[in-house]
Amino acid sequence: MLEERYEKSEAGRAEIKSRSLVQARVARNLLLVIDASKTGADWLGVVQGATPADLQLLVQHGLVTPTAALASLSRPAPLTGPASTIGAPRTQTGSRSAASRLAGVPQSSLDFGQLYTALSTFAKQQGLLKGYRLALEVEQCQDLPQLQVLALDVVDRVRATKGDAAAHELRATLGFH
Image (cartoon, rainbow, N blue to C red; front, side, top):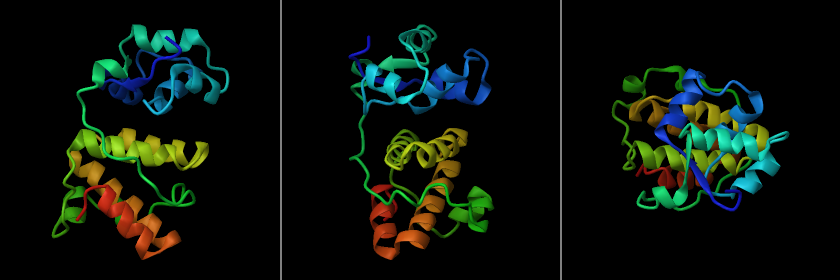
């Protein structure tokens, strides 16, 4: 169990929003950050206070599944980006509705699952605190337009802190051409 890599299931993403099954803070934190980039043992080492019992609880409830069960899902290439962009305050453009934000703007060529995975991967590259904040924002998105608005907001944050070249690279990685 500890050597396997895990992904959040649809039930796991729903649990993050509903908070109905997992009440313990450590197990909830583990559910929030876990992905296939590390083994179960590695994630237990990252989340302070997490034990194999916490991981077992997530598996028993079907909130995370071994990646072998998810091998058929396509994954975008790992993202690169500046570590200081996440955690910046949302700009006014991030508070506009999804429809108004995306009106006249090219939409991502990625579907919900691919964009979700790409943003989650980018979040994990931002360090524990900044990445945690972005991961929470990603988890709050309930549909593709909301996720696209968040993606464009993250691109804006990168542009503000790292410039147009970094923003252009991230925009392309997120499927905005």
